[in-house]
Length: 405
Ligand code: ADP
Image 1 (tube, rainbow, N blue to C red):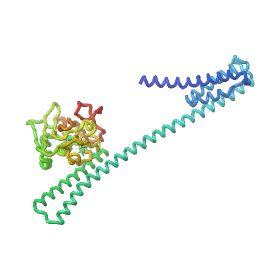
Image 2: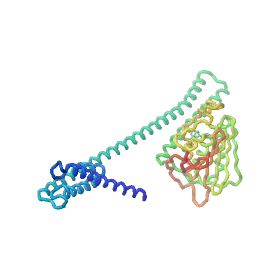
Image 3: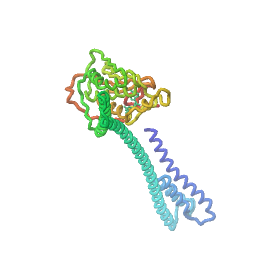
Image 4: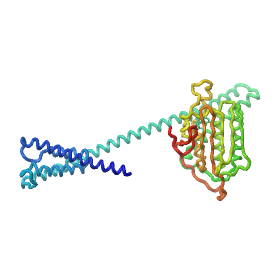
C-alpha cells in the first residue's frame, strides 16, 4: 500500500518535472536566439506547453503555461529582467496564455483518447485470446464427449447386428448382452456427469446433511464395482474396523464420489491388480480410502487431476510394457472434478497420494456426525469449484491450495 502511494507521488512529480524541463529548454533556446529575433513571446514556449500536456496531462500543461508566461514577462518582454509589463505587451501575454491553455488542453485530451484507445485495444486482444481459448476447450470437450458417446454406441450396434445376423450360442448371447449393458452403463455415467456439471454450474445441485454410516457406503460401492473389478481380474478388498462413528454427509453424493474414485482405480490398474476400499476414523473425521496397485500418477499430472476435463497420461508412455489399452483408458476428465465438488459440498476433503508406477491412494475425509441437528432436512446448494491443487508433500494432492511446480 505504502509502496503504491510512493510510486503514485513519484509519477506526479515526474509529470510536473517534464513541464519544468521543456519550459527550461524553450527558455534556453529563446535566450540563445534573442539577439537575432525581436523581443516578444517565443512560439517555442507553445511547443513546450504542448509537449508538457502530452507527456504529463493538463496539470503539467498549465504549469508549463504559467512558467512560460512568467519567463517571457521577466526576460523577453520589455522592460527586460523586470515583472513590469507595458500595456501593449499585456495583450500579447494574454493571447499567449489563452492559446497555451487551449493547446495544452487539446494536447492532454488527445493523449487521453490515445491512451484509452490503446487500453481498449489491449482489452480487446485479451478478450479475443480468452474467447479463442474457451473455444478450443469447448472443441476439445465436444470431441472427447463425441468420442465417448460414439465408442459404446458402435459396440452396441455391432453386437446387436451380430445377434441379428446369426443365431449366437447361449453363452455368446449372454456375453454380448453383458457387453451391451456395460456400454449402456458407460453412457449413462457420462450423461450423469455432464448433467451434474451443468447443475453445479447453475447452482442447482443440492447436498444434504445426513447421518451416514461410512461402512454402509463402502459396502454399497463394493457391490456396485465388484463385477467390473472381477472382469479385469482385480482383487477387490474391503477393510472396515468395528465401531466406526457416523459421519455427516449426503448419502447418495458420497456413494457417487466414492464409486467414481473406485471406478478410476479399476480403470487405471492393469488387469490382475488389487484394489482396497477401507474406512477408519481419524480425530474428528472418518477417512474413506481407495488404494490401488495401478499405474500411479505422473508428478506433472498431480496438480491438475481434479481440474475440469483434465486427463493424465499413462505413467509408462513410450516405455516397454505399457499396452495400447492402458494408454487409451476411456474417460473425459470429469470424474474427479465432480467427486471433489461433491466431497467439498459435504464439508469434506479429497486428497491423493501417488507416484508414477507405484499405485495411488485417494482419501475422502468427512466430518464425524456430532448429532446436534435434525440432519436430513438440511440442504445446501453446491457451488462451482475452481482448479484444485495443493501445497502438500511431493506425491500428495488435496484441495484448496495451489501447487507450485
Ligand atoms: P477420466 O478418468 O475420465 O480421465 P477423472 O477426472 O476421473 O477423468 O481423472 C482425471 C485423471 O486422473 C485421469 O485421466 C488419470 O490420469 C488420473 N487418475 C485418476 N484416478 C487414477 C488412478 N486411480 N490411478 C492413476 N491415475 C488416475
